[in-house]
Image (cartoon, rainbow, N blue to C red; front, side):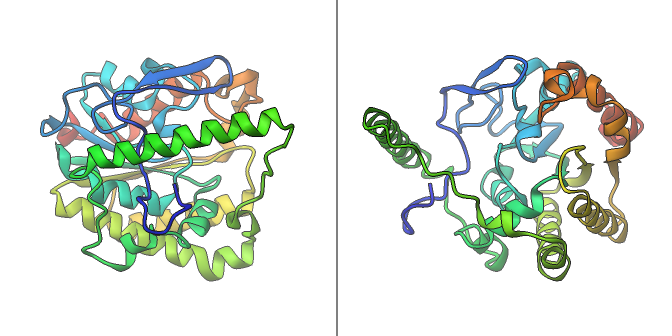
Length: 299
């Protein structure tokens, strides 16, 4: 909700609610935890193995709980506090870490960087309240402390949106879909502006990880269907950042994804997100190359 300047910038779903998420191979439906994320109940103030940060691929778009990255990690006996949220970019993910990261005790954070549109998301996010998380080290919206009020405001907003949708349908007024500011991103703008901001956000995510005594790991995830040049500059920026900071990371490269598109993506390779098999395949790579070989990650 960004329509009113003094309102919250919501980062979570409504707590303890049923979410009908999306459909590619089938409808994805899940229940949220006490604070509105795709987690089992009862993890707040507990020890977990991992905190996940990322966008729709991390929230688990269009698949059931068991086939999300978090669900697949749980099958391997890891406890995961999943802060993944569809539609978010790096600034929102920094905000999620600052608002909710200290609600569990975790030695490890895995940040999934989606090269397909993270720079576009960042380009939009920097014009919102989210920029305060980067510029002001003490900025918080107190979304957990004020969670009951936050939830009430979000429910009121969603109920109003439903009423507006009903009114629009009854009067045959089509919703005007406008491209966001991020859609204006080109390679020159990306190189001269947005990758610089991306690196700044990455350093803030690293600093906030250290502040809660967590070790940051990075998964760089490409996509066959998004602008190749933007993907390449995003992956190059994050790879360099990880190497400079001596962080462990893996890169799920576009070349691999393109060769296996039918087996990895929904709708027989035509979907945006992974299929059940796709999530399983990529998860095996993450476990093999980033997690299982590391003594500090053994469950």
